Figure: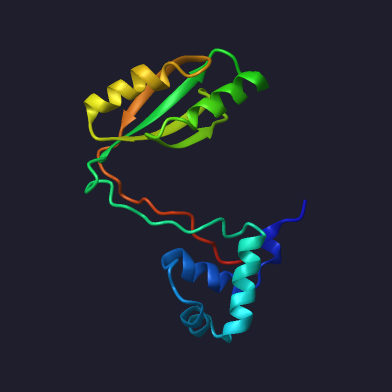
Length: 161
């Protein structure tokens, strides 16, 4: 498998830097900002999309204005960690909209979930009725976030060379 990041040149990285902040920028404005003409910029952007470096564009919402400002991180320990059990958990966890992120962890527990709800009461229901009933869940531990200090989407990193 080829390391995709090694194939990105300085202009590709500039494109990624700009669209990470403004995904709605026009190709003309993008070309001006990175110092290329419109046609090569458009071709590069299309290649970044087609190769999956750019996976899509989406709107970002203010969760507080949407009444979803309660964030909990949940450690999940499974009773079975064989591949079939992990696959069953993975399949079902994607069906819970309050779970924003789910990561398989190497450590003292198996998964770390980021759960966003309107408050403690709704979180308790999600935990009791949805998360705790996921396949092979043995136990959970919850950590409630008091403040989001940094919450960014993944942005490209500058090349090392």
